[in-house]
Image (cartoon, rainbow, N blue to C red; front, side, top):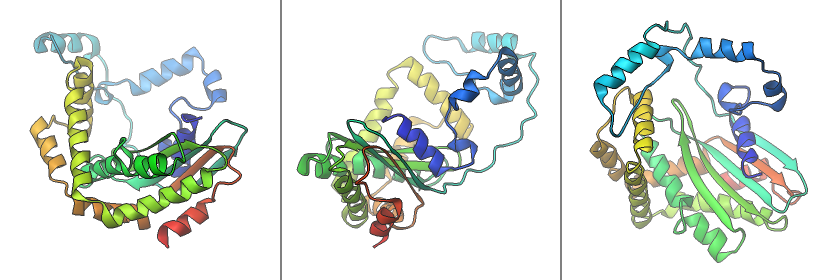
Length: 286
């Protein structure tokens, strides 16, 4: 349930768009694939201009280049047009089912990779619900005991992104959990302080540095940076951008989330007592 709810949330955030579709696709489409379909897909999309080759660790650059020329040098570039811009539209999806928990997910539009506010958005999500010291964890789990697990995260794409809150709770507590979550999102815009932002900055930098310990993670990071920036920024540049985000910046961003950013809601399980999208929206802007 805590996996499928994110598929539904994404679909509701970007309805009728490629970004709103699940990666695997619906089961009826997958079961209809045959060898010719897969071969045609590979031929159309697996082209040199659609590939990034990245290596890290004990590798020889010249050897990698020669292998790439041998394996991919004969391939022709694709004729694919650039993807259309994705638009976060939002809305509500509810699936009532007899489950042990009611699953609640709330999403707001956030910046894409290249937006100036990308690190502000990530620091906001971390301070809001990125760990045991975060606001949502402390207020909703520790003080009020409304759930066992609650978190916020910020994901980004080339031209848009999503800041998401998720929690699982009982059927009796889902209403309180949803409304108090919205209240905490509003409160963050008013009094998120420098100490909270400093903790979030440290958490981000620690995650970045720990990820560099693994060669596979380094290779993945290099490929992702090339895809986004067409270059590999120095680590110091990334750390500098993280450190440049101040509490006032995060509060300004939090105000957008709390008042004007498009919103999507997904609920799954015993959710008869859960508030509607309109009720949460009214509470958010009140």
